[in-house]
Amino acid sequence: MENSFHIFNNVFLAIVEVDAIKQDIPQKATEVTRASLKRTTEIEGVKSLMNKYLPNKTLGYNRNGKPFIQEGGYISISHSKSLIGLAWSSELNIGLDIEEITQKIEKIENRFLHPAEKKIAINQKVKTIIWCIKESMVKILDNKSINFKENLLVMTGTNAHEWKCVVLDQIENKNHSIYIFTTLEIKNNIVCIHTKTELNK
Image (spheres, rainbow, N blue to C red):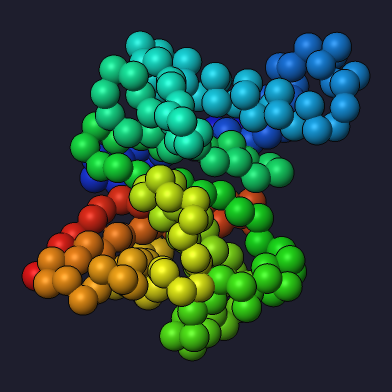
């Protein structure tokens, strides 16, 4: 897999492998520091996906660093060591996150798992999914001050690939939002994308 493309209702997701992008970066770029190579790869990966799937759209960033499509619509970007992802929608304010499944997640689980989530967080994969969903929520809400453990609650959905999330200080409201996420597992990475928002009436 060098590229993959997915459609969820009115949400579109494109993913490219980092190694495929590195092959196209000029040799002079590989002679710089590892950090700048990583950043160059990420930039070139996003450019590649934009050129292929959104050639007539212009990418912008707000003052918090959240990307948007200048011509209208929503977009989200994420990357791990091996994958770069781009998601977009004309209707839904979306969030995308990609994380590699590693043991590192267990070192920080007490910082982001709500007590109720510990019942479902049975392995590294599920813990990574919960982390991804909460990272995606930060992007959707455009609020980096959210406390993952105290402000967000992730729940299972109707199947193994569907998950739900609520903002805890909103659930007392009659019409609070339920954020629906779809997850994929690609090359030992969790790819988490917000695909729908429902109102709990």
